[in-house]
Length: 106
Image (cartoon, rainbow, N blue to C red; front, side, top):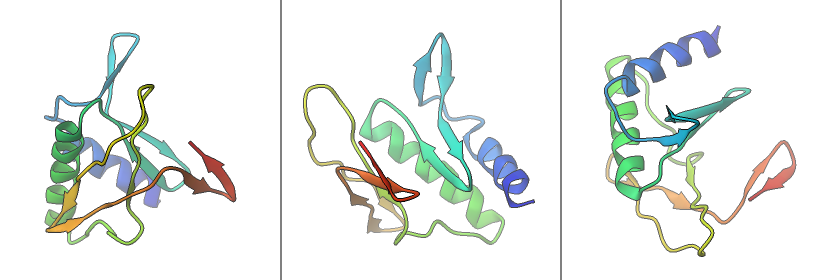
Protein backbone atom coordinates (compact mmCIF):
# COMPACT_ATOMS: atom_id res chain seq x y z
CA UNK A 1 0.00 0.00 0.00
CA UNK A 2 2.84 2.39 0.85
CA UNK A 3 4.41 1.89 -2.58
CA UNK A 4 1.17 2.88 -4.33
CA UNK A 5 0.83 5.98 -2.15
CA UNK A 6 4.44 7.13 -2.53
CA UNK A 7 4.29 6.55 -6.30
CA UNK A 8 1.31 8.90 -6.50
CA UNK A 9 3.06 11.53 -4.36
CA UNK A 10 6.28 11.41 -6.39
CA UNK A 11 4.40 11.70 -9.68
CA UNK A 12 2.39 14.64 -8.34
CA UNK A 13 5.51 16.36 -6.99
CA UNK A 14 7.65 15.92 -10.08
CA UNK A 15 4.98 16.30 -12.74
CA UNK A 16 6.07 19.83 -13.64
CA UNK A 17 9.79 19.40 -12.95
CA UNK A 18 11.83 19.20 -16.14
CA UNK A 19 15.10 18.07 -14.53
CA UNK A 20 16.31 14.50 -14.79
CA UNK A 21 18.57 12.33 -16.92
CA UNK A 22 17.75 11.45 -20.53
CA UNK A 23 17.71 7.74 -21.24
CA UNK A 24 16.91 6.82 -24.82
CA UNK A 25 15.08 10.12 -25.27
CA UNK A 26 12.99 9.77 -22.07
CA UNK A 27 13.63 12.01 -19.05
CA UNK A 28 14.08 9.88 -15.92
CA UNK A 29 13.65 11.84 -12.67
CA UNK A 30 13.71 9.01 -10.15
CA UNK A 31 14.31 5.33 -9.76
CA UNK A 32 12.40 3.28 -7.18
CA UNK A 33 13.57 0.03 -5.65
CA UNK A 34 11.79 -1.79 -2.81
CA UNK A 35 10.67 1.04 -0.51
CA UNK A 36 13.48 3.44 -1.46
CA UNK A 37 13.66 6.17 -4.08
CA UNK A 38 16.67 7.63 -5.88
CA UNK A 39 16.24 11.04 -7.49
CA UNK A 40 18.47 11.45 -10.54
CA UNK A 41 19.57 14.48 -12.51
CA UNK A 42 22.64 15.80 -14.26
CA UNK A 43 23.15 18.90 -12.09
CA UNK A 44 23.23 19.99 -8.48
CA UNK A 45 20.62 22.67 -9.19
CA UNK A 46 18.38 20.08 -10.82
CA UNK A 47 18.60 17.78 -7.81
CA UNK A 48 17.79 20.69 -5.51
CA UNK A 49 14.71 21.55 -7.60
CA UNK A 50 13.56 17.91 -7.54
CA UNK A 51 13.95 17.64 -3.76
CA UNK A 52 12.28 21.01 -3.19
CA UNK A 53 9.28 19.93 -5.28
CA UNK A 54 9.10 16.56 -3.53
CA UNK A 55 9.36 18.15 -0.08
CA UNK A 56 6.63 20.70 -0.88
CA UNK A 57 4.22 17.95 -1.95
CA UNK A 58 5.04 15.75 1.03
CA UNK A 59 4.38 18.63 3.44
CA UNK A 60 0.98 19.18 1.80
CA UNK A 61 0.13 15.58 2.75
CA UNK A 62 1.49 15.86 6.29
CA UNK A 63 4.73 14.00 5.56
CA UNK A 64 8.40 14.97 5.50
CA UNK A 65 11.71 13.74 4.16
CA UNK A 66 13.79 12.00 6.81
CA UNK A 67 16.99 14.07 6.64
CA UNK A 68 18.92 11.51 8.73
CA UNK A 69 18.26 8.73 6.22
CA UNK A 70 18.58 10.86 3.09
CA UNK A 71 21.97 10.87 1.35
CA UNK A 72 23.36 12.43 -1.80
CA UNK A 73 25.95 10.76 -4.00
CA UNK A 74 27.62 12.32 -7.02
CA UNK A 75 28.59 9.96 -9.81
CA UNK A 76 30.67 11.13 -12.75
CA UNK A 77 33.58 10.01 -14.89
CA UNK A 78 35.84 12.95 -14.01
CA UNK A 79 35.83 12.52 -10.23
CA UNK A 80 33.68 14.00 -7.57
CA UNK A 81 33.34 17.33 -5.93
CA UNK A 82 31.20 18.45 -3.05
CA UNK A 83 27.48 18.68 -3.60
CA UNK A 84 25.45 21.04 -1.45
CA UNK A 85 21.82 19.94 -1.30
CA UNK A 86 19.53 21.39 1.38
CA UNK A 87 16.21 20.17 2.74
CA UNK A 88 14.35 22.60 5.00
CA UNK A 89 17.57 24.38 5.98
CA UNK A 90 19.56 21.19 6.68
CA UNK A 91 22.38 20.03 4.44
CA UNK A 92 22.00 16.50 3.09
CA UNK A 93 24.98 14.29 3.86
CA UNK A 94 27.13 13.46 0.84
CA UNK A 95 28.49 9.91 0.63
CA UNK A 96 30.93 8.16 -1.72
CA UNK A 97 29.02 4.89 -1.68
CA UNK A 98 25.65 3.67 -0.56
CA UNK A 99 25.07 0.44 1.34
CA UNK A 100 21.87 -1.22 0.21
CA UNK A 101 20.84 -4.61 1.57
CA UNK A 102 24.37 -5.13 2.95
CA UNK A 103 26.01 -4.50 -0.43
CA UNK A 104 28.04 -1.39 -1.26
CA UNK A 105 27.09 0.39 -4.46
CA UNK A 106 29.13 3.10 -6.14
